Length: 59
Image (cartoon, rainbow, N blue to C red; front, side, top):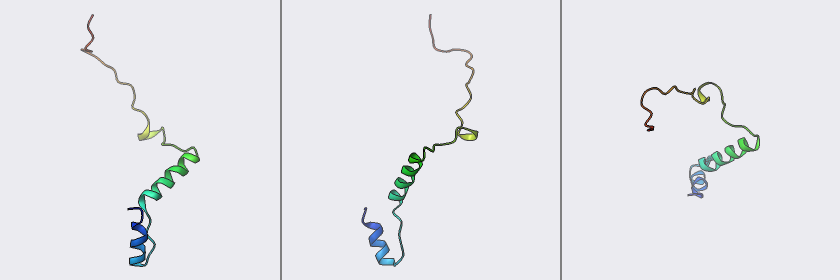
């Protein structure tokens, strides 16, 4: 399927972007820049939960 964008582009007469290749280059550039997902807001790790009641431990 790697040749599909070229075939479609030739047939319809407009540039076609290969989504997999574009995503791969985007991820590569983010890694090269040292960027990652934010650690604040909704991307922050969840707060620790208090466990009460039965824990399944015996002894």
